Length: 88
Image (cartoon, rainbow, N blue to C red; front, side, top):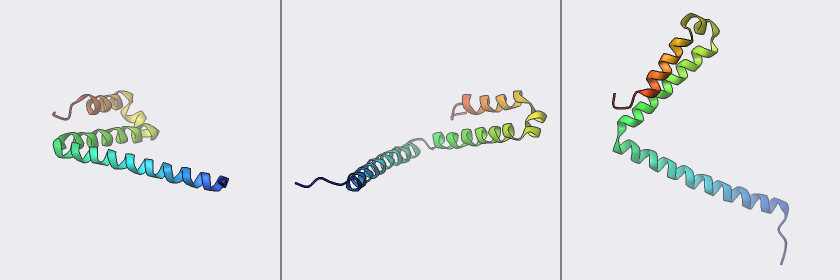
């Protein structure tokens, strides 16, 4: 019986990790597709919230825009985007 070298062990571990990640990504993708088929409004709402949070983050990192609009406007956008349900 031969002992496996370190590189063989690393290769087997990497192959196993790749298979695990691939399986979990497939499972997540199947759940996303099922969610999209069941209720597409939720997917649309998720994109809108992501866009709103991205815009607020850009305003925060650009100091002149942040100072011009103020922190309260940013909190208002975050509140509206996150609190409103996808049915609104």
